[in-house]
Length: 445
Ligand SMILES: Cc1cc2nc3c(=O)[nH]c(=O)nc-3n(C[C@H](O)[C@H](O)[C@H](O)COP(=O)(O)OP(=O)(O)OC[C@H]3O[C@@H](n4cnc5c(N)ncnc54)[C@H](O)[C@@H]3O)c2cc1C
Image 1 (cartoon, protein in one colour):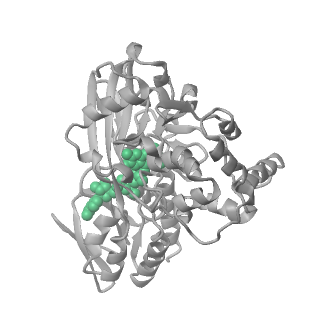
Image 2 (cartoon, rainbow, N blue to C red):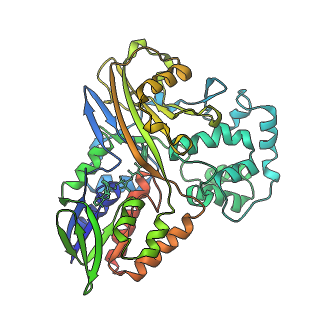
Image 3 (cartoon, rainbow, N blue to C red):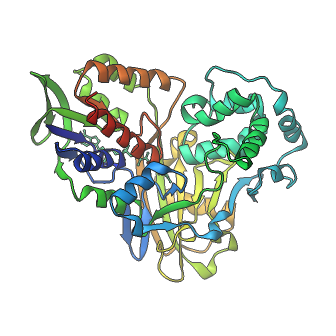
C-alpha cells in the first residue's frame, strides 16, 4: 500500500518514520517548506538557536522510546543543574519559584488575602463540567494565584489566554485530581502518600529534568527524516476516486491508499474545504496564538548573575510584549560560544497579539530585559523569527472538535489526522499521536 504523510513537523516526520520502520508500506512525506516545521535549530555566528521548542521532560515516555528506537540516544543532553532556578517577574522584581510548593506561602510573594484563599481551597466543592482555566483557578485558588502563578505558566508555555482555554483539554490531570480528591491540596497530599507507598498514581513524575539534543531539537527531526522519501510541495486539495486518495499539490499530484494529515488546523481547513465543509468549519474554531522568538547573544562577563538560571515568566499584570525569557545557554551546553550567553525572548501569545508584528521588536526586547532583569549591556548578536500562527489554543470547544475529527476519520476511510492542533501541543504529545496512528494503521482501522 502507498501512504502519503502531509506535513514535515515532528508530528508528520515521526509518523512517517514509524510507518516506514514497522510496516511494509510505501511511504512518502510531502512538506511545503522545511523539515522540522515549528522546531528548527539554526547555527549562526557560534550560537545554536531554537526557533521553537528547546526540549522535553525526562518523564515523557513516547519521545524517549522514539529516540532509542531510531538510535539517537547518544545525542541527548540534560539541562544543567543551575537551570533548576526559575523566576516570575511580579511587582517590579524577580521572585524565585521555590522547589517546595509549600514555601510559596512564606516568601512574601503572595498577599495575606491570597494565602487565606489558598487555605480555604480544600473546602471548595469540585465542579465536574469543563470550565476555562481562569474560571477554575479563580474559583479554587483566587485571582492573585491566577495572575502570579498559573497565568504566567499558561501564557508563557502555551502562549494562551486563561480566559478562553479549556481546563479539561489543556490540564486533564489537574481536573482529574479535583474529581478524584475533591480538592487540589488534598490531592497533592494524597498523591505524595501514594508515591511513598509505591502506588501507581496520577502524579506521574514529580522530579523530571528537561532534555534536548546536542545540536538542537531540529537535529532529531532531521535524523528521523533521513530514512523517508520526502517531496517538497504544497498540498492544495484532496479527492477520493475509486477508494484511492488523490492529493493535488502546487507542483504535482499524488495518489495513495492512505493519507495522513499532520498539519496546522488552518492548513488542513484549506485542503478539505471542498471535501468535507462541515469538518472544515470546525477547524476554523481553533484559534492560534502568534509569537516572535528573539535570540540575543551577549558577552557573559557583563551580565547579571540571574542569567545563570533557567529564565523567567511574567505576572499577568506585568505583561507588555514579552511572555517569557529563557537563558538558553545556561539551560543547555553548546548553545553559545565560549564566554558568550544566549538569551531567548518570547514575544506575543494571545495576551499580546499585536506585539510579534511590531517593527522595533529587538529594541522592545532590550527594554524588557533592562526593566525585568537589569540587562543593559549591548548585545553582539541578534536573531528574530516570527510565527504568525505559533501555537493552537484549546478552548471549551476543543472536545467537540476532537469528536468531529473521529467522525471524519470514520466517514472517510483511509484518511487520518494528527498534529499539535488536536492531541496535545508538546513534542511528546506529537510523538505519542504518531505511535497511536501507527497502531490504527497496523490494526486496519
Ligand atoms: C516558540 C515555540 C516554543 C515551543 N516550545 C516547546 C517546548 O519547549 N517543548 C515542547 O514540547 N513543545 C514546545 N512547543 C510546541 C511544539 O514545538 C509544537 O507543538 C510542535 O513542534 C508542532 O509540531 P507539528 O508537526 O504538529 O506541527 P508543525 O511543526 O507546525 O508542522 C506542520 C508542517 O506542515 C507543513 N505544511 C503546512 N501546510 C502544508 C501543506 N498545505 N502542504 C504541505 N506541507 C504543509 C508546514 O510547513 C510544517 O512544516 C513550542 C512551540 C513554539 C512555536
